[in-house]
Length: 85
Image 1 (spheres, rainbow, N blue to C red):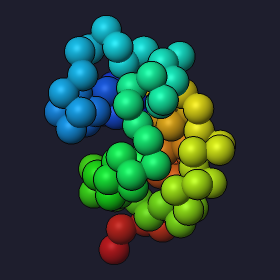
Image 2 (cartoon, rainbow, N blue to C red):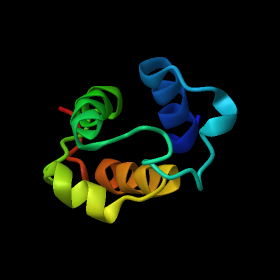
Image 3 (cartoon, rainbow, N blue to C red):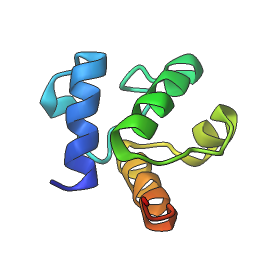
């Protein structure tokens, strides 16, 4: 399962969104992901993908505009995460 597929599944579960709304080009804003929701999603992403998000929510909102952007960011975090012992 790709990062995007895992992220779509996570957001369907967490936000109760229809699958067709979760396309890579969908803006986070159009999905109802505001700054508070972004904080909640970050915690869920950290748990699901076993990564640590060090960026501040405001920085993430500025950098990540679409679902595809968020999936790409998670891929970057996974690639640079230390190996599990």
